[in-house]
Length: 230
Ligand SMILES: [Zn+2]
Image (cartoon, rainbow, N blue to C red):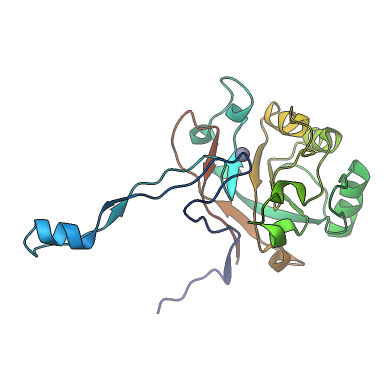
């Protein structure tokens, strides 16, 4: 067994399963292309391998939104500098906000004070609400607090590098024009959403790292998010 110099690695991503729907109702499919039994038979027993196709929305499960999601010709996923995806993490505890409540600028200012660090560029700002507990439930997009556009604008003014959260959608679920999404994306702030296990980050110094696919023109992408501490 090798000695990893990183003390702890925590996977902050939800698992994805076949037939799982995203918040817009698009489904997920992993159809089988080849099976070990089929290829073994075809090769007369020389080889057997399995392969599936993956059909999934960019915006399913734990994923990142790039500006291209809301801004024509905005930065796509492939153009996000990797330095913006691997950053010191800054956790803000907003778990006191309940279903249907707004997470206001005052809430963020208080959480900032409690965290002991100023909100600003050079870190992944992680908004922890605790809603990962209802993830996968029908109507999960409505069983959560929301972030009004003014709070997103507050982060824009503080020049936040990357926004991340366990929220399943950030806007008020009845505001179909998504003003919060727009406030971040038209100001080039990418958003990682639907994280889990954020309770494991409390009172720890950590690095937030996120993988992403390099497909150009993508408005969002799945990938794994994790927390490392050295
Ligand atoms: Zn998305």
